[in-house]
Length: 156
Image 1 (cartoon, one colour):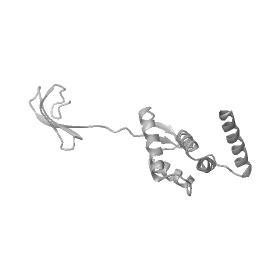
Image 2 (spheres, one colour):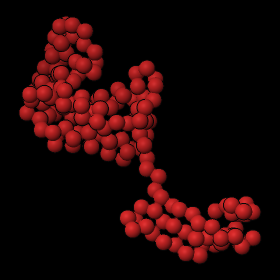
Image 3 (cartoon, one colour):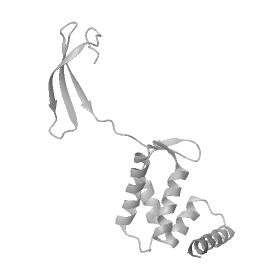
Image 4 (cartoon, helix red, strand yellow):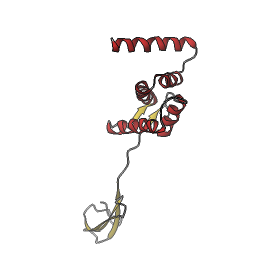
């Protein structure tokens, strides 16, 4: 640690204390060059996920946006609030575990789609229609045909 008085990197720790919550460690140090005593604090730096939007702007990851999107897609469907929250938590955990601290909104959308596909086909269709920007009935028809074909291929 650099001495705030003389700039030396040569110091020793005199005392270490942990905060009551265990979140911060306080260290009393003494510079071995000039004898100046100073205090440092250590805390864990939390990792933050950044989302790269379609227009290339970057914003902090917001789990609530995932929850709102799923709730909207699953309105009046047999999906509980706990399941919705679990999906959002799982996606955040996956991104952190994989070290994906910069992720595209498209990848997050794909992760949501995959989970909804397993959970409820109607909610999945609703989410895809908004996320992929369906413009007319033909988009729905094409998607449903493709969805049904994939389901038949995996069952047969």
